[in-house]
Image (cartoon, rainbow, N blue to C red; front, side, top):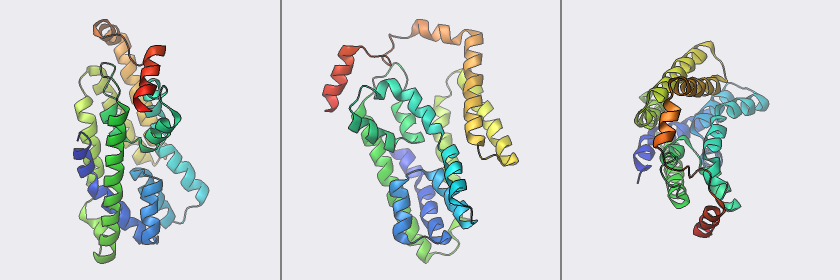
Amino acid sequence: MAVMPLTIAVIPWGILAGSFALEVGLTGLQSQAMSAIIFAGSAQLVALGMIKAGVGLSGILITTLLITSRHVLYAMAMRNRISPLPLKWRLSLGFLLTDELFAIANHGQQHKFDPWYALGGGFTFYLGWNIATFIGIIAGQNIDNLGELGLDFAIAATFIAIVVPTVTKPSVLICVLVSLVLAVVCAVLGLQSGLLIASLSGMIAGYSYAKLTGELQSESQHSEPNPLQPDDASKQAANKDVQ
């Protein structure tokens, strides 16, 4: 249920992706397959725009790689929780990994990671995204100028809903502000790697502030033993739970 509000919020985004795919020239089946296989909203919309503009395959691949590179950071943050799981679980959660899934599954060191919870949340969002895409395909065939209805605002609204609840410390606030400013600057300058630059710069700024002010030391003194580094017994228990 935790991912349902985010799933509902992203429905206009999925509708836009489905209708835009038809506008670019894809068939209904190709449009639906794009959401089912790629499952990356921002990358899909950018790729569709580049296809419409006549950009070559290599340019599309490089651009989408840069856009989705933030998932590498997500994977690194969750690595110690995911690595004890069997391969089939790692592949499944890796495919379903989105901004939304990372937000609900990566609660912090004080919470135990539940692979079934993450799988359920990820699949719910996957199902919602594909249903929204299907609606967009149907609507795009029957409603003119669907892209002018302001559906793209769902993108900003979704990310605001993800980020705001996490701003609980000064270091996180600095991270968000630095990322926000740099993302706008890179967008104005037309840098394709702007999202990656903004993300890395924000994390570095937040970490530097936390280290300089002693926030990291204060947090470690009040935290419980780190479950992100499980011992052999906990790894065996994790494997037993999910097999």
